[in-house]
Length: 69
Image 1 (cartoon, one colour):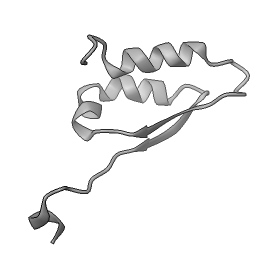
Image 2 (cartoon, rainbow, N blue to C red):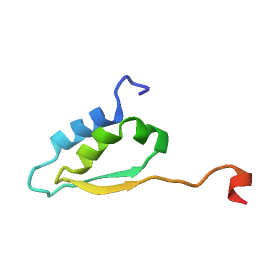
Image 3 (cartoon, helix red, strand yellow):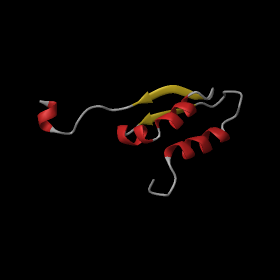
Image 4 (cartoon, one colour):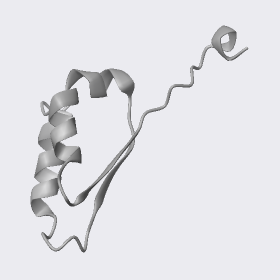
């Protein structure tokens, strides 16, 4: 968002550069839950691509001491 482009647009641009023979795979690493929820349907479509691992790491731990106690 800070450069005027959303995550699905960036992911689709990356996927378009992957070779179709699956010699290179893309995995989405750490994510921020609010950002994922904004574009969940589009990101789910990217995860269905054969060169993208169907895996999404979404942290749920809080930085709040009361929550962690």
